[in-house]
Image (cartoon, rainbow, N blue to C red):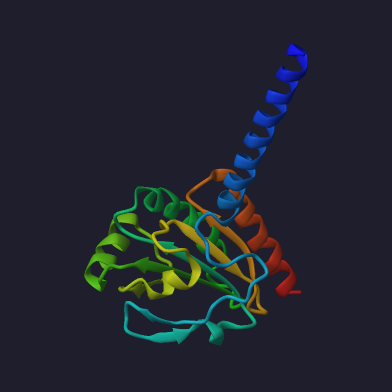
Length: 183
């Protein structure tokens, strides 16, 4: 009888732990995103620091990387030099590739200082109210996010925070996609 009770309690505990892991795994899968891989990327208008504007939908036919960032984010500052050297410097002359850093809730003056501090040369755009960020993330989600959008407008890869392995996958996917696009 004692053995049966122990096995029953272990089964219940294991089932509870599994259910908790599943719940955590669901939250970990979304990682604060309101969109998923395979979704059509929500369209928006961006304003670059020089005042020019563009719509995401006008970039159809190109591989687009959106990088959500902010000057107050230490992980963003850690990741940005990698984006600069491993992605931007390698692909900035490829007309089939667009990289846009989207700065969350900061004005042009702060962003210009941020660019100077981080020494990045890829374009940063304004999202002063966080409206663009809100199209892609759940409420109160954090920055340091990269979203890769295929030429057909579908999301094909997303990152959260700076994980060297995940970042290496992002680089590999960009390289592979551009090889295919440029054939």
